[in-house]
Image (cartoon, rainbow, N blue to C red):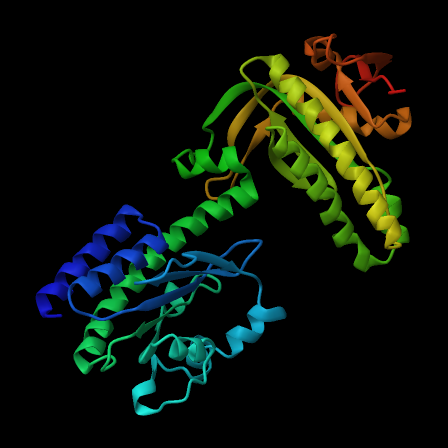
Amino acid sequence: MDDRHVIEITTWLMQSGLKGLSEADLLDGFCERCVANGLPIGRSVAVIDTLHPLYEGRAFRWDSCLAVERISAYGVAGAGNFADNWLRSAFHYLEVEGGNEVRRSFLRGDAADFYLLDELKAAGFTDFVAMAHRFGDEGAIGEIDCFFSHFATRAAAGFSERDLTALRELLPCLALAVKCVTVSGVAGTIAKVYLGDDAANQVLHGKITRGRSDRISAALWFSDLANFTHISDTVDPEEIIPMLNDYADAVISSVREAGGEVLKLMGDGTLAIFKGQKPSDACLSALKARTLLDKRLSDLTAQRRIEGRPVTDVYLGLHMGDVFYGNIGSKDRLDFTVIGPAVNEVSRIVSLCRSLQRKVLMSASFAAIVPSTQIDLMSIGQHALRGVNRAQELFTLLPTL
């Protein structure tokens, strides 16, 4: 590989990183171009951490001969096979020793002392090199502070010094391109985790100006846990967060499966909205979410009782109304949410569930939209809502036989 080839691959990496080509495609394209220009790469793995609630990072693989799993996510380190394998890896060695490169040439008799090297040697590989490209304190985001990669060859003479020089020149560009794409993905992940899919998409597409909001008609969902204050005062404090997580997972999963959007988690409370082409579609989706939640709660309660852990139920208020949906806050601290009288009303409705001994309460405006052929509702009379001028008729679901 000569200087012209290095420049061509570098240019491709910069252009592809700017375009947002995926990390796996970046590695594939890089390796294929290197091989086409005489650099004898037979297999490669690249690893970079991320910010995600379910996994710590991702690994990307390429092989010139075999079909391999291109992308895999690895969990939070600390236990299990992943942690053991990581501790035996060349990447961990570089992390601990602080170096930028480590090589094992089987032709020179180097030991196959890192994870997977014995398999590489048995598969006919002759040489192996791993490299670390660190981002520096100002360039790191959380644990995203280094790009690790390794390359192996089946070439009879292994990697030449010219090959290694080309890799050293090219890999900073690959690292930068992968980091660019990874950080872009992290921005999307963080937005969706904390804002929800719809709100995140709007923010990521530029809707970030304070006061910019849309008036929409939506079915509003406000739920909270039954007797949560009493439970908090009487159970082991170490049980509170796991319990909240278990029940929040049941609520959020049900809302999202039914097409709703969770906007806020407030302690044990959850605010969500359902939109649809027709108001009846939104209301039926909200009721579908409640049906899904009932099944999840039944399974969750049974499991927690087996484990001897505290159990509870979920109160739910449903309302239909117009709300403003968008950015509310200060100049540099915004929340993408819904506001309006309808939001206050649904929160007051759910607060009556305990005193009225009903798991589900809905407003007259919600009940009026629900097709009577698809759901049976029962009026429970007029009730005053705190902070609302006049009493409102509330409805609940007829009990099933």
